[in-house]
Image 1 (cartoon, rainbow, N blue to C red):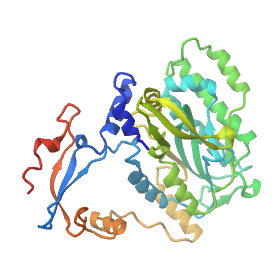
Image 2 (cartoon, rainbow, N blue to C red; image 1 turned 90 degrees about the vertical axis):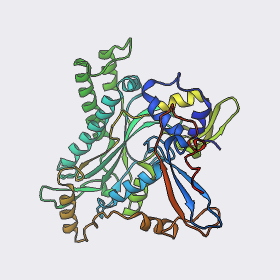
Image 3 (tube, helix red, strand yellow; image 1 turned 30 degrees about the vertical axis):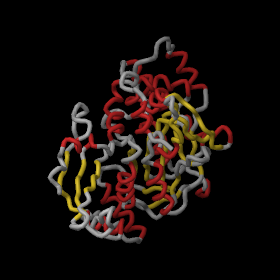
Image 4 (cartoon, rainbow, N blue to C red; image 1 turned 90 degrees about the horizontal axis):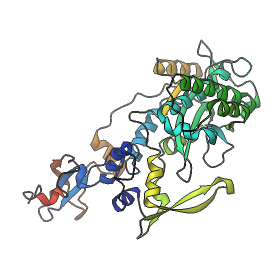
Amino acid sequence: MASLQDVLKVVDWKNEMPHGSHKVLSSIERCHTAAMGYHAYTCDDATCEHIHIQYHGCRNRHCPHCGSLRAQHWMEDRLRELLPVKYFHACPVAKRLGIVFTLPSELKAIAYLNRKVIYNLLFQSSSHCLLTLSKDEKWLGGVPSISAVLHSWGQQLDFHPHIHCIVSGGGVDKNLNWKNLKKGKGKYLFPYPVMEPIYKGFFLEKLHEYIENKTVKLPDNTNWPVLKNKMYNIKWIVYAKNPMGNAAQVVEYLGRYTQKIAISNHRIKELDAQGNVNFRYKDYKDGGKRKMLKLSGKEFLRRFSTHILPPRFVRIRHYGILGNFKRKERLREILKKFKVPPHPQKLKVPTNIANLCRFGSSEILCPKCKKGKLVLRHVELPRSRDGPKNAIEKGVLSDFK
């Protein structure tokens, strides 16, 4: 087994990767090492006095190590926004399930050169499609709850930008009264032949405007008029089928899937002596079979770097009922009309109580003697990349005993 951090430590990536990715890759490389700083503890048992070093994480959203706690906190926030209804979602196992808005392969080069603009346009186009059809009395005549998540990768780390959506199986009218879907008996949200032209038309119309006003740059030798006509004449992939079911499934999905990064460490199976990376992927063209792919370390990191988001870019967005303006008041009123209790207020849990819930003890036991308690003695802040290679060797812990 290996990790993304192992690959970064072995491969000479600094002169190969795009400069914009250096900050993220460097943070992941230094994650949970002395370079990121640490908390130093000593055991309060006089017969032990063990020194324990707890290295800091990088807290970067692209880091495989640092995502679990953030996902848990994010999931707890979403728990307070669920309604007692069915939801439609995107399923990563069977492509024909869920709500997924994709781009044709012919537009991927434009998307890669203009990632921030195209990512924003994907959000705009998908939400426009869902809200337009929801407001139509033929289909719903109301406003649903929509959570949209951007993913930019395929199973082989190829560049494949698309939007996954979680949408409530119904919506509210102007008086916040609940309305169910009028067609499909709850088995699907909206039919593909209706969704595809709305999504495609909005996207291409806006993209044409951006190209005309130079907001979007085209790759060399791109004939936009010809490409635009071709894009209008082909079918774009949009899936919108099969509801999730109960709220428990929604919560599990939110915590597991929406916080994903391009590749997790458990998929990286081997880093060989030549710096090649072997990782597992699912081949959806072959029935979802698990297979292995071998890439050079530099190619592996190059592919990973294509999925680093623009600075401060928000990859999870909410629309409709979950729109930011007066969201809490709106949800409270809808729950009242469902005759169910309002969601509990968010509480800040003290660290000792959180430790008690997670580990069964509010104290941190010494990992060596298992009897004494760890007492904080020193906090070392993160150092620059040009600082000493091992702060512990510099003697910062020399006066602990």
